[in-house]
Image 1 (spheres, rainbow, N blue to C red):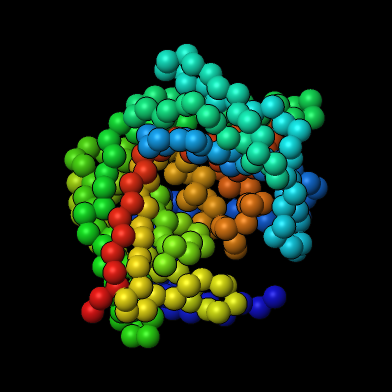
Image 2 (cartoon, rainbow, N blue to C red):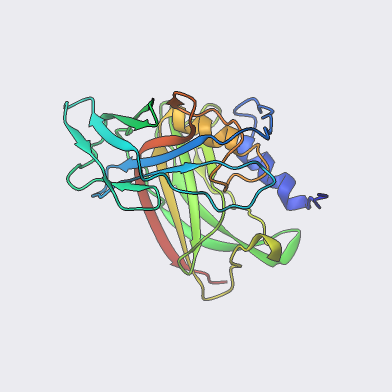
Length: 269
């Protein structure tokens, strides 16, 4: 399938990678079915969810069957407490009592069909917040409008960020990651470019719309996953092609223990 790559796609790549990390060329496999595990624990009140699904080949549709026959638990390695998650059907498992705590490390264990998959992730101590959110027209095409979140990286290297965005409560596909290897202590104020092509199904930003951005403070393992996921053709798929997962045992996906804050604002000019 031929794809037209517009100028703003190139700018996306420039913004995402920005010289902070070496770009990894990811091999797109047309492999057999694999287990896909995606879970998240935050320092915000739960419940927290873990999804367990099966992958498909790259050329198949994006409907991924859930696995309801898994045993899923999350252990707080810092405090020693463990919770077994309850299956809510369609491959979704949910906590009922766990509370994520800044600075704590969490271990996800999924047992399925005689195999064990594990991942660990640590919630960063500091929660960086978006100070300001506004809309800005794209310089090369004034009809395209993108969000600009402003936030300041604390002094001291080793901070990693993931950003997601919504328009009128509709999620825009994909996410952005940042690190502070070359930008320690600076204020970020770049536009969050995304595909506005109708075939991709993303909502467009118009004056008066409500924009929301989520800023996650993540650990390096989660950062590496989303950084390499950005090099695949469709980072929104539940069956990503060989990004650097933090899950052992051969499963795809990621377990993300993070700080999460969000900010909403009306698009004005």
